[in-house]
Image 1: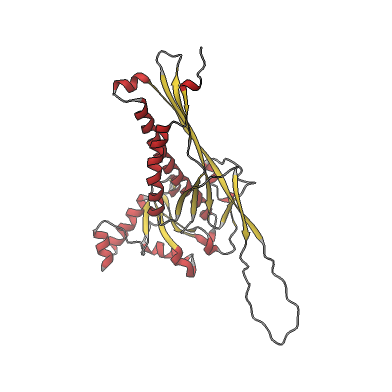
Image 2: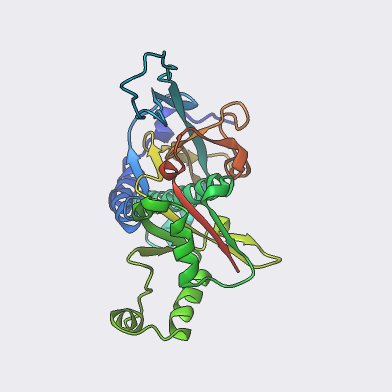
Length: 322
Protein backbone atom coordinates (compact mmCIF):
# COMPACT_ATOMS: atom_id res chain seq x y z
CA UNK A 1 0.00 0.00 0.00
CA UNK A 2 1.27 3.45 -0.89
CA UNK A 3 2.16 5.74 1.99
CA UNK A 4 0.69 9.23 2.14
CA UNK A 5 3.09 12.10 1.57
CA UNK A 6 3.15 15.86 1.95
CA UNK A 7 1.05 16.07 -1.20
CA UNK A 8 -2.02 14.62 0.51
CA UNK A 9 -1.54 15.72 4.11
CA UNK A 10 -2.13 19.33 5.07
CA UNK A 11 -0.65 20.52 8.35
CA UNK A 12 -2.55 23.32 10.09
CA UNK A 13 -5.23 23.53 7.42
CA UNK A 14 -6.06 27.22 6.85
CA UNK A 15 -9.81 26.63 6.69
CA UNK A 16 -9.85 24.62 9.93
CA UNK A 17 -7.95 27.44 11.63
CA UNK A 18 -10.18 30.09 10.12
CA UNK A 19 -13.19 28.44 11.77
CA UNK A 20 -11.29 27.98 15.03
CA UNK A 21 -10.11 31.59 15.16
CA UNK A 22 -13.56 33.02 14.42
CA UNK A 23 -15.17 31.19 17.35
CA UNK A 24 -12.33 31.66 19.85
CA UNK A 25 -12.00 35.39 19.15
CA UNK A 26 -15.58 35.94 20.30
CA UNK A 27 -15.75 33.25 22.95
CA UNK A 28 -12.68 34.35 24.91
CA UNK A 29 -14.09 37.83 25.44
CA UNK A 30 -17.52 36.39 26.14
CA UNK A 31 -16.30 34.09 28.91
CA UNK A 32 -14.08 36.73 30.49
CA UNK A 33 -16.93 39.23 30.59
CA UNK A 34 -19.51 36.58 31.44
CA UNK A 35 -17.71 35.81 34.72
CA UNK A 36 -16.66 39.38 35.63
CA UNK A 37 -13.07 38.33 34.85
CA UNK A 38 -13.08 35.79 37.66
CA UNK A 39 -12.37 32.99 35.15
CA UNK A 40 -10.00 34.38 32.55
CA UNK A 41 -8.89 33.00 29.22
CA UNK A 42 -5.74 34.50 27.76
CA UNK A 43 -3.49 33.64 24.83
CA UNK A 44 0.22 33.64 25.54
CA UNK A 45 3.03 31.29 24.53
CA UNK A 46 4.49 28.95 27.11
CA UNK A 47 6.97 26.07 27.15
CA UNK A 48 7.42 23.01 29.35
CA UNK A 49 5.10 21.12 31.66
CA UNK A 50 4.90 24.05 34.10
CA UNK A 51 5.14 27.82 34.05
CA UNK A 52 6.82 28.97 37.24
CA UNK A 53 6.72 32.45 38.71
CA UNK A 54 8.66 33.49 41.79
CA UNK A 55 7.72 36.40 44.01
CA UNK A 56 8.05 37.54 47.62
CA UNK A 57 5.42 36.50 50.13
CA UNK A 58 3.61 38.98 52.32
CA UNK A 59 5.06 39.47 55.81
CA UNK A 60 2.14 38.98 58.18
CA UNK A 61 3.31 41.24 61.04
CA UNK A 62 5.40 43.91 59.33
CA UNK A 63 4.21 46.77 61.54
CA UNK A 64 4.18 46.69 65.35
CA UNK A 65 4.45 48.96 68.37
CA UNK A 66 7.81 50.60 69.13
CA UNK A 67 8.87 51.24 72.71
CA UNK A 68 10.87 54.49 72.72
CA UNK A 69 12.47 53.56 76.09
CA UNK A 70 13.77 50.13 75.02
CA UNK A 71 17.22 49.19 73.66
CA UNK A 72 16.55 45.45 73.26
CA UNK A 73 17.30 43.64 70.04
CA UNK A 74 14.61 42.90 67.49
CA UNK A 75 13.76 39.50 66.02
CA UNK A 76 14.19 39.68 62.28
CA UNK A 77 11.41 38.65 59.90
CA UNK A 78 12.64 37.08 56.65
CA UNK A 79 11.45 38.21 53.24
CA UNK A 80 10.67 34.77 51.85
CA UNK A 81 10.41 33.92 48.18
CA UNK A 82 7.56 31.68 47.07
CA UNK A 83 6.84 30.03 43.74
CA UNK A 84 3.59 29.65 41.86
CA UNK A 85 3.47 26.79 39.39
CA UNK A 86 0.98 26.76 36.53
CA UNK A 87 0.34 23.31 35.13
CA UNK A 88 0.03 22.39 31.46
CA UNK A 89 -3.22 20.58 30.68
CA UNK A 90 -3.01 18.43 27.54
CA UNK A 91 -5.99 17.78 25.30
CA UNK A 92 -6.79 16.14 21.97
CA UNK A 93 -9.53 16.12 19.36
CA UNK A 94 -10.36 12.50 18.68
CA UNK A 95 -9.83 11.34 15.13
CA UNK A 96 -12.64 12.35 12.76
CA UNK A 97 -12.89 10.60 9.41
CA UNK A 98 -15.47 10.80 6.60
CA UNK A 99 -15.60 9.55 3.04
CA UNK A 100 -15.30 12.13 0.29
CA UNK A 101 -18.53 10.72 -1.08
CA UNK A 102 -20.37 11.78 2.10
CA UNK A 103 -19.41 15.41 1.37
CA UNK A 104 -20.33 15.23 -2.29
CA UNK A 105 -23.80 13.85 -1.56
CA UNK A 106 -24.72 16.96 0.45
CA UNK A 107 -22.98 19.40 -1.84
CA UNK A 108 -20.29 20.32 0.68
CA UNK A 109 -16.77 21.11 -0.41
CA UNK A 110 -13.72 19.95 1.50
CA UNK A 111 -12.96 23.52 2.56
CA UNK A 112 -16.47 23.99 3.92
CA UNK A 113 -16.09 20.84 5.96
CA UNK A 114 -12.70 22.03 7.22
CA UNK A 115 -14.28 25.28 8.40
CA UNK A 116 -17.10 23.38 10.14
CA UNK A 117 -14.57 21.19 11.95
CA UNK A 118 -12.67 24.30 13.03
CA UNK A 119 -15.74 25.93 14.58
CA UNK A 120 -16.72 22.73 16.39
CA UNK A 121 -13.17 22.30 17.69
CA UNK A 122 -13.08 25.86 19.05
CA UNK A 123 -16.48 25.61 20.75
CA UNK A 124 -15.62 22.25 22.34
CA UNK A 125 -12.21 23.56 23.40
CA UNK A 126 -13.61 26.63 25.16
CA UNK A 127 -16.32 24.61 26.93
CA UNK A 128 -13.74 22.09 28.08
CA UNK A 129 -11.47 24.80 29.45
CA UNK A 130 -14.36 26.37 31.35
CA UNK A 131 -15.37 23.06 32.91
CA UNK A 132 -11.73 22.27 33.73
CA UNK A 133 -11.33 25.67 35.40
CA UNK A 134 -14.44 25.03 37.51
CA UNK A 135 -13.21 21.51 38.36
CA UNK A 136 -9.85 22.81 39.60
CA UNK A 137 -11.07 25.79 41.61
CA UNK A 138 -13.88 23.74 43.21
CA UNK A 139 -11.36 21.13 44.35
CA UNK A 140 -8.87 23.73 45.59
CA UNK A 141 -11.45 25.66 47.64
CA UNK A 142 -12.93 22.40 48.95
CA UNK A 143 -9.56 21.82 50.59
CA UNK A 144 -9.65 25.18 52.40
CA UNK A 145 -11.86 24.89 55.51
CA UNK A 146 -11.72 28.64 56.10
CA UNK A 147 -13.41 29.26 52.76
CA UNK A 148 -16.19 26.68 53.02
CA UNK A 149 -19.84 26.96 54.02
CA UNK A 150 -21.44 23.49 54.10
CA UNK A 151 -25.24 23.54 54.32
CA UNK A 152 -25.95 20.20 52.69
CA UNK A 153 -29.19 19.68 54.63
CA UNK A 154 -31.11 22.36 52.72
CA UNK A 155 -31.43 23.92 49.29
CA UNK A 156 -29.60 27.16 48.66
CA UNK A 157 -30.96 30.41 50.06
CA UNK A 158 -29.92 34.04 50.09
CA UNK A 159 -28.67 33.42 53.65
CA UNK A 160 -26.21 30.85 52.26
CA UNK A 161 -24.75 33.48 49.95
CA UNK A 162 -24.40 35.88 52.88
CA UNK A 163 -22.66 33.21 54.97
CA UNK A 164 -20.41 32.40 52.03
CA UNK A 165 -19.42 36.05 51.70
CA UNK A 166 -18.69 36.18 55.43
CA UNK A 167 -15.83 33.73 54.88
CA UNK A 168 -13.95 36.60 53.25
CA UNK A 169 -14.46 38.90 56.25
CA UNK A 170 -13.85 42.55 55.39
CA UNK A 171 -12.76 41.48 51.89
CA UNK A 172 -16.23 40.15 50.98
CA UNK A 173 -16.57 42.88 48.37
CA UNK A 174 -13.81 41.15 46.40
CA UNK A 175 -16.27 38.37 45.48
CA UNK A 176 -17.31 39.40 41.98
CA UNK A 177 -19.33 36.49 40.56
CA UNK A 178 -21.28 33.38 41.56
CA UNK A 179 -20.73 30.13 39.64
CA UNK A 180 -23.56 27.69 40.29
CA UNK A 181 -25.42 24.72 38.88
CA UNK A 182 -28.74 25.57 37.23
CA UNK A 183 -30.56 23.56 39.91
CA UNK A 184 -29.08 25.77 42.63
CA UNK A 185 -29.84 28.91 40.61
CA UNK A 186 -33.51 27.96 40.30
CA UNK A 187 -33.65 27.01 43.98
CA UNK A 188 -32.30 30.46 44.82
CA UNK A 189 -35.00 32.13 42.76
CA UNK A 190 -37.63 29.97 44.46
CA UNK A 191 -36.24 31.09 47.81
CA UNK A 192 -36.76 34.72 46.80
CA UNK A 193 -40.37 34.01 45.83
CA UNK A 194 -41.05 32.04 49.01
CA UNK A 195 -39.73 34.88 51.15
CA UNK A 196 -41.67 37.44 49.09
CA UNK A 197 -38.80 39.84 48.57
CA UNK A 198 -40.22 43.32 48.10
CA UNK A 199 -38.90 46.48 46.50
CA UNK A 200 -36.54 46.62 43.49
CA UNK A 201 -35.47 42.99 44.04
CA UNK A 202 -38.99 41.80 43.27
CA UNK A 203 -38.83 43.54 39.91
CA UNK A 204 -35.54 41.77 39.20
CA UNK A 205 -37.18 38.41 39.85
CA UNK A 206 -40.28 39.25 37.81
CA UNK A 207 -37.98 40.12 34.90
CA UNK A 208 -36.53 36.60 35.07
CA UNK A 209 -33.24 37.55 36.73
CA UNK A 210 -31.89 36.23 40.00
CA UNK A 211 -31.14 38.59 42.90
CA UNK A 212 -27.71 37.60 44.24
CA UNK A 213 -26.46 40.37 46.53
CA UNK A 214 -25.40 42.61 43.68
CA UNK A 215 -23.35 39.96 41.89
CA UNK A 216 -24.05 38.18 38.63
CA UNK A 217 -24.54 34.44 38.32
CA UNK A 218 -23.04 32.09 35.74
CA UNK A 219 -25.21 28.99 35.48
CA UNK A 220 -23.17 26.00 34.39
CA UNK A 221 -24.18 22.37 34.78
CA UNK A 222 -20.55 21.33 35.18
CA UNK A 223 -19.93 17.92 36.70
CA UNK A 224 -17.79 19.49 39.44
CA UNK A 225 -20.78 21.51 40.70
CA UNK A 226 -22.93 18.40 41.16
CA UNK A 227 -21.11 17.10 44.19
CA UNK A 228 -22.92 13.93 45.21
CA UNK A 229 -25.59 12.18 43.17
CA UNK A 230 -26.69 10.11 46.18
CA UNK A 231 -27.38 13.04 48.49
CA UNK A 232 -28.02 15.61 45.73
CA UNK A 233 -25.31 17.99 46.91
CA UNK A 234 -24.54 21.00 44.75
CA UNK A 235 -21.62 23.42 44.94
CA UNK A 236 -21.81 27.18 44.45
CA UNK A 237 -18.59 29.15 44.05
CA UNK A 238 -18.11 32.81 44.85
CA UNK A 239 -15.02 33.93 42.96
CA UNK A 240 -12.75 36.96 43.08
CA UNK A 241 -11.21 38.62 40.04
CA UNK A 242 -8.50 36.48 38.39
CA UNK A 243 -9.50 33.50 40.53
CA UNK A 244 -8.69 31.13 37.65
CA UNK A 245 -6.58 31.69 34.55
CA UNK A 246 -6.56 29.43 31.51
CA UNK A 247 -3.66 30.36 29.27
CA UNK A 248 -3.87 29.13 25.70
CA UNK A 249 -0.28 28.33 24.81
CA UNK A 250 -0.95 28.26 21.08
CA UNK A 251 -3.67 27.38 18.54
CA UNK A 252 -4.35 23.66 18.20
CA UNK A 253 -2.11 21.61 15.97
CA UNK A 254 -4.41 20.22 13.30
CA UNK A 255 -3.64 17.47 10.82
CA UNK A 256 -6.02 16.90 7.93
CA UNK A 257 -5.72 15.12 4.67
CA UNK A 258 -6.86 12.35 2.34
CA UNK A 259 -6.53 8.68 3.17
CA UNK A 260 -6.31 6.03 0.50
CA UNK A 261 -6.37 2.26 0.45
CA UNK A 262 -9.96 1.63 1.49
CA UNK A 263 -13.11 1.01 -0.52
CA UNK A 264 -13.62 4.79 -0.51
CA UNK A 265 -11.24 7.71 -0.24
CA UNK A 266 -11.64 9.37 3.13
CA UNK A 267 -10.67 12.65 4.72
CA UNK A 268 -9.31 12.61 8.27
CA UNK A 269 -8.90 15.25 10.96
CA UNK A 270 -6.95 15.05 14.15
CA UNK A 271 -5.90 17.79 16.55
CA UNK A 272 -4.20 18.39 19.86
CA UNK A 273 -3.74 21.44 22.05
CA UNK A 274 -2.85 22.40 25.58
CA UNK A 275 -3.27 25.24 28.04
CA UNK A 276 -1.80 26.29 31.35
CA UNK A 277 -4.06 26.41 34.40
CA UNK A 278 -3.43 28.53 37.50
CA UNK A 279 -5.37 29.59 40.60
CA UNK A 280 -5.03 32.82 42.57
CA UNK A 281 -3.00 32.43 45.76
CA UNK A 282 -2.31 28.75 45.04
CA UNK A 283 0.25 26.63 43.25
CA UNK A 284 0.09 23.31 41.47
CA UNK A 285 1.86 20.64 43.52
CA UNK A 286 4.37 19.32 41.00
CA UNK A 287 5.39 16.41 43.23
CA UNK A 288 1.92 15.10 44.06
CA UNK A 289 0.03 16.20 40.95
CA UNK A 290 2.74 15.76 38.36
CA UNK A 291 2.80 16.69 34.70
CA UNK A 292 -0.04 16.32 32.16
CA UNK A 293 -2.65 15.70 34.89
CA UNK A 294 -5.94 13.92 34.22
CA UNK A 295 -9.25 15.47 35.26
CA UNK A 296 -9.25 13.26 38.36
CA UNK A 297 -5.84 14.62 39.33
CA UNK A 298 -6.87 18.23 38.69
CA UNK A 299 -9.95 17.62 40.83
CA UNK A 300 -7.94 16.40 43.83
CA UNK A 301 -7.77 19.06 46.56
CA UNK A 302 -4.34 18.04 47.86
CA UNK A 303 -2.76 18.77 44.48
CA UNK A 304 -3.41 22.50 44.95
CA UNK A 305 -1.30 24.10 47.68
CA UNK A 306 -1.93 27.47 49.27
CA UNK A 307 0.94 29.93 48.89
CA UNK A 308 -0.90 33.08 49.94
CA UNK A 309 -0.32 33.99 53.57
CA UNK A 310 -3.83 35.48 53.81
CA UNK A 311 -6.91 33.38 53.07
CA UNK A 312 -8.54 36.51 51.64
CA UNK A 313 -6.12 36.25 48.70
CA UNK A 314 -7.45 32.83 47.67
CA UNK A 315 -9.80 32.29 44.67
CA UNK A 316 -12.99 32.79 46.70
CA UNK A 317 -15.53 30.81 48.71
CA UNK A 318 -17.18 27.37 48.49
CA UNK A 319 -20.85 26.80 49.36
CA UNK A 320 -22.40 23.33 49.48
CA UNK A 321 -26.17 22.80 49.51
CA UNK A 322 -28.79 20.32 48.36
